[in-house]
Image 1 (cartoon, one colour):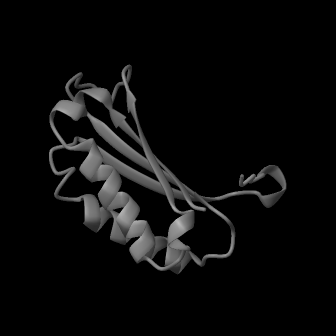
Image 2 (cartoon, helix red, strand yellow):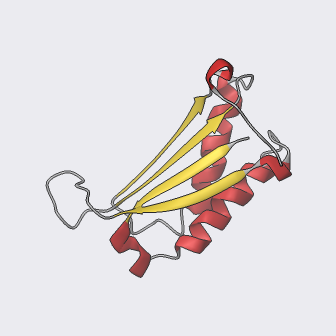
Image 3 (cartoon, one colour):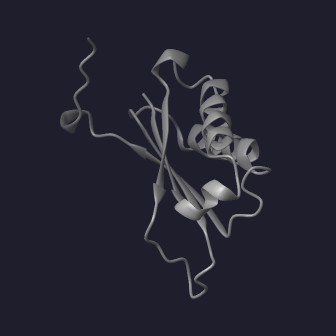
Length: 114
């Protein structure tokens, strides 16, 4: 934990380095020291069909991070700030960059390690 899913407008793969975006996000999560580094999971998915506002050329990056309960609102806010700082140069041409952190309900989550 955490699970970090980066959604991005698929045309961005020709404009920014998605690999760098994933790496910067992943490293910011590790550097936060809120999680064990081996437990951090980060992945990205390009979204082919999307709209942002009224301009068809608008693009987006949305970072959804699911964590187990126990972190304070202050820790979550600091984590958002650190991730944003880490990706800001990579995403400075993106129309909309949003991030969210959500607590996972332990009763509806299972983890199997083989």
